[in-house]
Image (cartoon, rainbow, N blue to C red; front, side, top):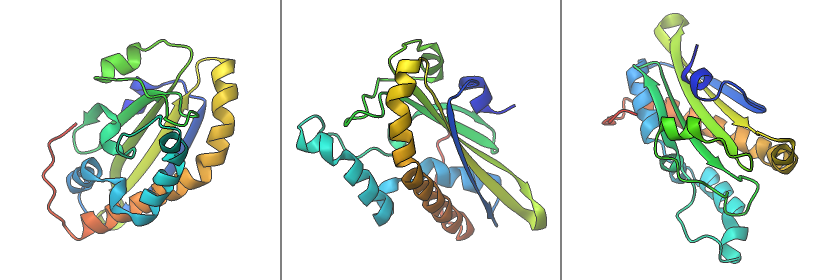
Length: 186
């Protein structure tokens, strides 16, 4: 059972990616907590392109979406953490709702928005290495929301996959180089 199973047991879409890292789990999760998309030029460009319509239409002047916009949903020691968003992701400005904690994430029963939860799980791998898996789940509560979200998902999924793969590669570099990251926990 994972944190994702607790906070978003039912989901409509799922995407998983994994990588093997020669570093301990605590260092890997510390790197995850401090990862920022803006540090990767390709990821930063992809997010800017995604957000250009909202900016051109004057619907958004917020900083580009990044992991610090996600609400921490839980942490299980040095093995797992999860974070989430609630919104109308197909909208130019993402239609994000404020989510203050895991309880408010789980308590949201609105039928006009999606819940998105992203989890990171570290487990032992052969040769003293660690395997880091990221899983993203999206729950569409009604057929109407599914109808709105599905085209967006299929459009962004290849880019989302590329972003996850680049994120995992950066996390591996940081963790294996032993970059010192002070982890405040989730």
